[in-house]
Image (tube, rainbow, N blue to C red):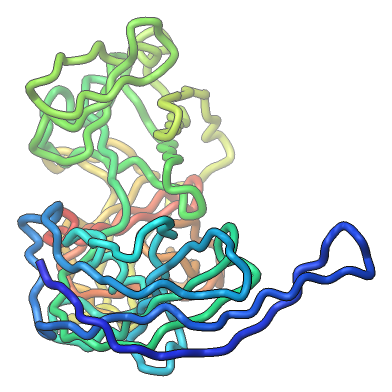
Length: 371
């Protein structure tokens, strides 16, 4: 654990707070800003194998205002001394210190724009305010800088299908299809495509039976099996009763609900070809194929490539040799004709998925998503 020592700095800041009477005004002045302490070590590497361990403790003197009032604080982090773009921690109150775990500090550094897997300088300062964040009266401490080596913070959870209703049967490592994640609400997942008649479950990682989602005992909802030591939940049986066909399987991971809705493909025509290209493609254009198991196509509307190297940059989909499809959201989203360039923020090997029925896409950093 790293500790910090105090250096003093004062700033004067005033703000007006209006009382119930329009002519009366209470003015609360910041007489002394919070003061951040200088670090007794200034260079450390975050250990991605022990992310819950404490990484850094920051301490500061109290901010002082002309009137006694409850105070809250936040840590502000930036990649530059001017704090041109910054990220903030959760507010803390009734204390003059905060301890970040490895994962919390790594996440704060990522939000502040520090790239992973290299040494960078992170600038930190304390912000005080009155009331709920961000508050109406604020003052900021001096800034300190630390040298930090971060790892890649993959911010989302992937879902995969398993069970006889899917192409993979009861094999947890058989090219299990991804369930497309909503870009705006990462708790929402959809898979529109072909299903067999049979039971179904959801996995968070191929090759492992936990974490796993099945149906709860009351039916109509999901239950999480967090570890393999926990009881194995029942399978989702709606698709067994509905029969083989095309459906939209929707999941809300925040309230553990799901729906299964028939989908009409009568007006849909399968693509003849699909590829990706752009500045993110290390080796140039890459070709996707229709979703198959063991060389046999299972769903002609689902396209994927199991492994392609991409680096920071952008890419788009090209359908039928000429139609450009894109978007602006990382990791998942819905592509539309001339919809923009899809960003990639870190180099890795990726698997890429595309649903030509809905325009949904998802790409997963194969190595970094398992950290």
